[in-house]
Length: 94
Figure (tube, rainbow, N blue to C red):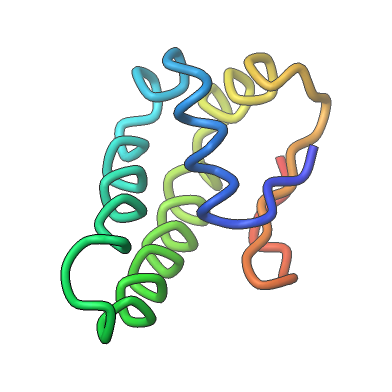
């Protein structure tokens, strides 16, 4: 399975409550994503960049070193391999 970016990951998290319970920063990504449409439209691009960079850092650092969490994600997504992407760049493969 390929997670194409932060927005796609938010959709996955919202459909799978078990992932939100196990991934401590899952709620943070969802909140950042939901804030994009709130407030001044002039800051939409900045909010998207903040969400995307937070997603990159959390995937890279929180998942990159946590084999148990990676195994749980693969199990919940029914996939032998999960590739996390951001702007057509692979940031992590588990």
